[in-house]
Length: 266
Image 1 (cartoon, helix red, strand yellow):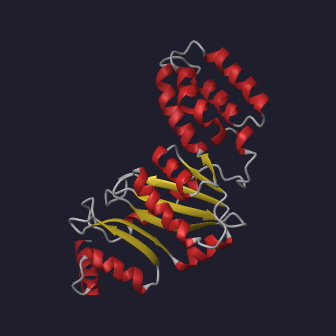
Image 2: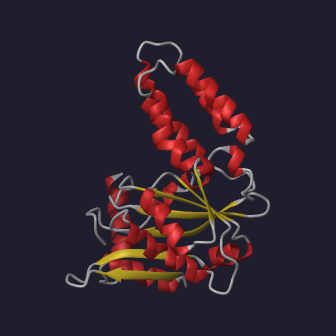
Image 3: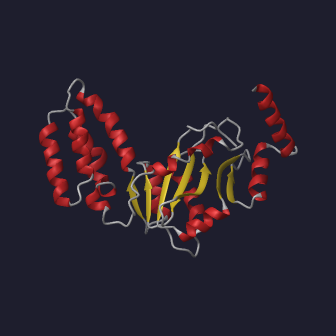
């Protein structure tokens, strides 16, 4: 295997023709006519942010801009940098990649920079109606700034995953946890305001003795965000059934196929 790895590295080095990895990447993007932007640190001249999109992806986005899913994998790729992955959906519910952005951090300003590049791709074309993300507050605020007319939904799959991890510890040896998760799921999928209130009241009555449980649900999720994931409110938005970002995560292999140094910089 080592011989194969060495041979592959030799081919890559020959193909680079003496260019640095950053120069080689920009060369590849230009050679393949990908649309890309990058930003450099004013002192070190090191590239800190990079956004790119394939021409075919841009064509698809302009045809199907209605729902956009986004997820940022925070230092889980081999290059130890946040990678923002942007995905769209066709009218036949097929997934396509819109674009990717390596960012120096998951900050509001970095997200605004990336989303402005997405907006520039759609200059003169309809803008997305709906964005779906996890509860990344910096990303949410960036969406509101760059796409103020678009709706925003929270990924229901991520919410359930986080709620499960957080509340399971609250139950301890109590065997009512599975029952609670069923109740919570029924709250999320309540299709009217009245049904939401009924189901949430039932949950409070049944599990009010579990210390910190209802306070956590109220303060972390319901008080400020129920309109972004409870069906009673999300059904008022034309999201075509797309209320999770799992389509994005199915394409995470891209983060392992890009020629960066594994040093946290480009």
